[in-house]
Amino acid sequence: MASGTASLKTGASRAGSQSLWLEALGNLRRNPSAIAGMLVIGLLVLVALAAPLVATHDPILSMIGQPGETGRLQAKAPCVPLLGCEDAVHYMGLDLNARDLYSRVIYGTRTSLSVGMITISLSIVTGTLLGLIAGYVGGRTEDVIMRLMDVVMAFPALLLAITIVTILGPGLTNALLGITITFIPQYARLMRASVLSLKEQEFVTAEQAVGAGPLRIIFAHILPNAVTPIIVQGTLGIGTAILDAAALSFLGLGAQPPTPEWGQILSESRNYVFTSPHLVFFPGIAIMVTVLGFNLLGDGMRDALDPRLNRN
Image (tube, rainbow, N blue to C red; front, side, top):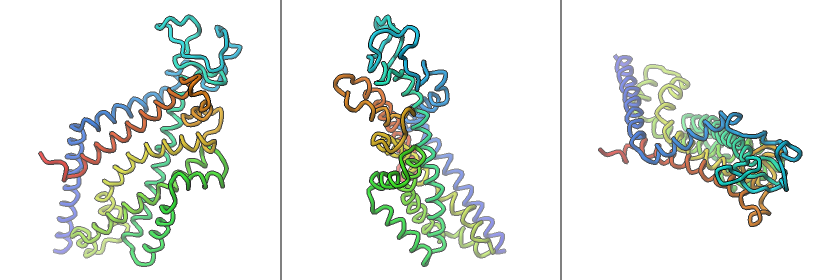
């Protein structure tokens, strides 16, 4: 009898979870911010995937000595035929090394999106596991894990990332690792809070009564019901991770030349803001649009997944 009751409660929990996700999906489709964010992110993903087709030149090839290139090439202004330009076409001009800026910005989309998504994915996996263990096991294990997370959060995120990369050495991989470490406590704390509220629910108690093991309870029942805030925070976190990666590259600690990365492009051109503004304008706009897209999607998902904000 107890087994049958537990099965009914577990089934009801799963059905309720599925209906909640279906309702959230419907709310997401009706949210203008979420739609705008998805359109921006979708366009950026397409550009990143089709970079060899969209770019007009090799992003690390200098135009010096190339056919059709005339005059002074370093920091050359944008050249578009529709605007009366008769020289070789460079939609965003050339950088200080006479490389096509448009192609570098296009390929920079690949780098920045990859860093943002990989960083947040690693942070979510690590932080979620730590939060699950801390929240479900409790006791001294919880104290050790959460005090460690408190120590990491005590440092400003970007300063901690700079310290880690400085110790490990400059490079995109080390920058990714440094940013990942700074994000882990956020997801660990979110997951722990969710687990603490869920492990006292009736469907968890019923599973424990029929002899279900901790792994089954955690991954089959608690995790699916606790993942909502993680998804929202992760979506918002991608934009922040891209900004942090750009900041590290700007300081010379992230992507190294000639890798096309928006922060690194800005770093190379920071002294030419007034004489050649196109060198900083286009990569700056790319960073702004990308972060805006993820923020819009994150805000839309938060509204869609919060039942208190969905009153028909």
